[in-house]
Image (cartoon, rainbow, N blue to C red):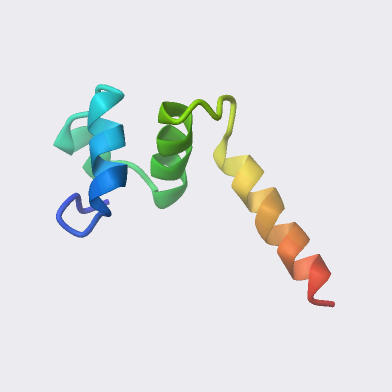
Length: 62
C-alpha cells in the first residue's frame, strides 16, 4: 500500500504498531486493516475474516 494515499489515522496506527513505511508498502489492504483493528484492540482479525464478511454481504443481497 502506498502510505502517501493512506488515511492519516490508519497510517499513524500502523506506525505505532511498529511498522516501517517499507513494511506498510508490502501490506495488502486487508493486512493493513487487520493491523489497524489490532491497534484499536480488536484482536485475532485475519484477512479470511474480511473474506467471510464479503461473502455474507453477497448472500444478503440475494
